[in-house]
Image 1 (cartoon, rainbow, N blue to C red):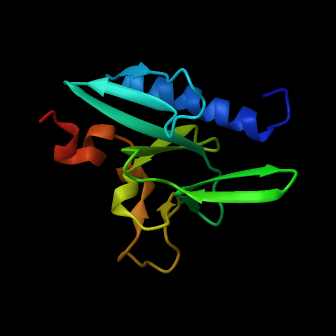
Image 2 (image 1 turned 90 degrees about the vertical axis):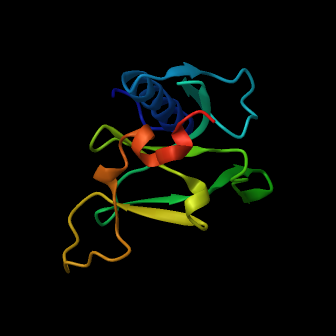
Image 3 (image 1 turned 135 degrees about the vertical axis):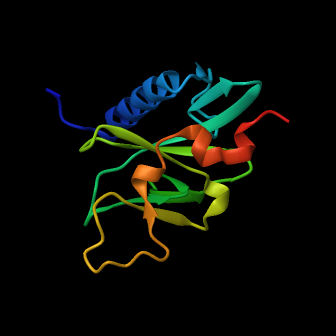
Length: 148
């Protein structure tokens, strides 16, 4: 990309990549009219709406860390607000180094989740969330992805 990655531009790129990935997975994608919605996109398929918040994350030490909160800065400083997990069904994590989207259910995690993108050096397997298992919305949602 020819321009510097300002925070808003990163967000726009993440939403665009998520939109394309969801369409490729067979979803109709709806975009909220308001930027104040708790989600960035709504994916629709098989009679089910899925509210998706998108996050742009780079790899640090082989991991994509996703905090379930919103942060912003203004003249009064930096602020953070926890995500209301009742208002978001999925978080789509766009990673520019691999140009891939990964999906997590925020209700299945506490304040954050770490997606392992590179192999664990010490061979640990317990408690590791492998990013490659988080690329299919239907697989991540399981039975929750089917209409009632």
